[in-house]
Length: 446
Image 1 (cartoon, one colour):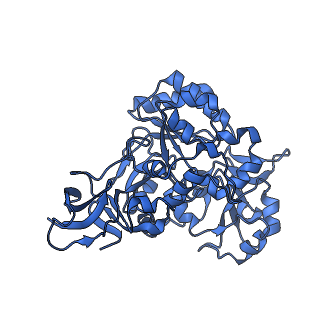
Image 2: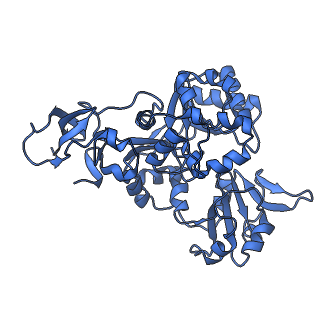
Image 3: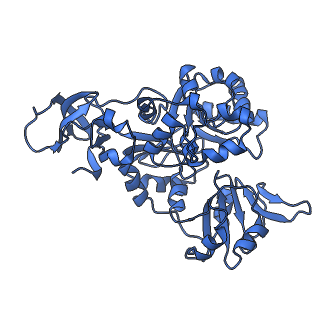
């Protein structure tokens, strides 16, 4: 039996001593009343650990080993200077435009095989050298020119492409787990669809508690992970037939699971609501992203959890301002209007496609400022405490009530450097002093 005492910690506005024993909160007493060795908190806040309700861990780890392609002007130099992997391939991420094909990438760098991922994560563009290594191009997402020639653009073909690349193994997630702990994240929901057993097992290498949306119907999660709702992607490059979507939803529900449906366009939102009305709803059904939700559709989302990412506004909101029609700006990454309508709302990162730091996302939710400094959809701002609480719901209840530091609760805790009100005046990861998962320090404080 091991005890850890957090002395003079602020919990729900009150200064207390917190005793942690055997992985749970075992005592909460007035500050200074538990004798013996302790971590002196000095009135700093202790919170439940944050939950990233939508992240792609393998892709995030891979992005850490990739070259940043967000600057179009300097891309040729960036690719030329980029180190290749052990097979000589150059992997790029974050390209912001829709103007690349194999010829364009050849003009930037043809000496080595190159693959560049669009910032959305939905498209890979390969140069000719890379394309020539893949063999038969039989995936439906392979784009072709009018004469049937592959253009080098591959839509929603991640698994197909991965199976044809030189074997490099899955990325090591240990450093990523430490990074997430540094933000105060104690649980993650990996939103990658159609996980193989090996990929699912590898995700349990992080110290965080892990929920998986990509476990196939009828399959079990690996030890150390939980099965979440079934991930379904409504690809903006081609929506599925209505009856097919209804059938997939019903199959998940019959298997005792909700669905977690990727929806980033107005058309996808309308299709999803209609399909759920036809298939029936499950208490665990959720909408991923809800990037564009028309006002008239908001009431129809009651009873669903919306897991959204206002961090995209801080990350590339200036591009959204230019690319999305002006009359749809009010529909982008709704937050306040969803809460006002009684819709359950959770915040998340969608990393690596959005910023992984939850404090950056919290700030974005409160200001909605884009990189050019102007707000986008200012009527959708949240208060800082509201935004934080949207990270505190249980992994299996996104948008539900925020977890609290109470007797018997798992000791998945975050110790800040200061009281909560002060931290929320300028939310930042530097406020995190230490992170406990199951009563053990995984970042800082000891």
